[in-house]
Image (cartoon, rainbow over all chains, first blue to last red; front, side):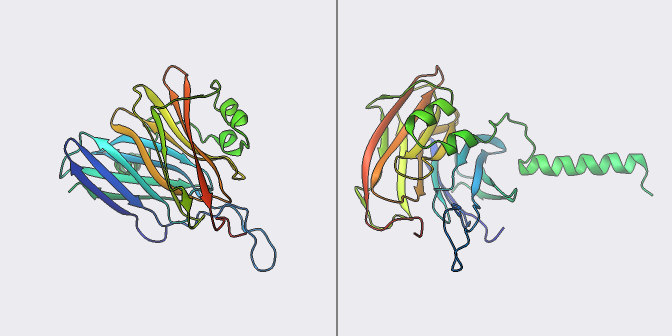
Length: 103
Length: 152
């Protein structure tokens, strides 16, 4: 899709806080453009995060999540050097995956 | 013309690549809960998820600003200290589509999620925790919005 996700993962004790900023319009399907036509809904529906290849979190989003969505969660047992990857699928079937290393 | 052998190793390679990218459905993910996202009231939402009516519980927290300056980006967080949580939901009462986000909790993550949502107007926001045993608990908070978030 557009820009890569920005993922920051910081280890603190026995868990890592992962912050992700995704790049996506997240249209609700409620807005109208200048000519009065409704702009169709276009938003991320599913998000999943994996730690060292194992899925640790899945989420389903509706159109009311903000544009360029932000997400923060804590993974237990993650240490510096581990890989965290985040993927999303939107309602048009587009998908994106990005990866980061825990610092 | 490819031999069958070449084709098999090619598709195995593609499958390995997809698995490496985490796109193969190796974990049983719930199908997208369209009915839940279409629900307009708390009662509909709970019914669409097939659980009982929620009970307010202090161990579930919804965090957010008291007054949101920009309804297009309201940072909200949901968390719970209760063990045995299956799902955490964030819902905004007066949005056209009440359910904002639904998080499946596994043992590998804490039951604590933050995201930013759009709010059309000042409203109550809810964090709803669905437990493994089917019980449902919630917490609510009022968030005032000075500028509505759906561009209207």
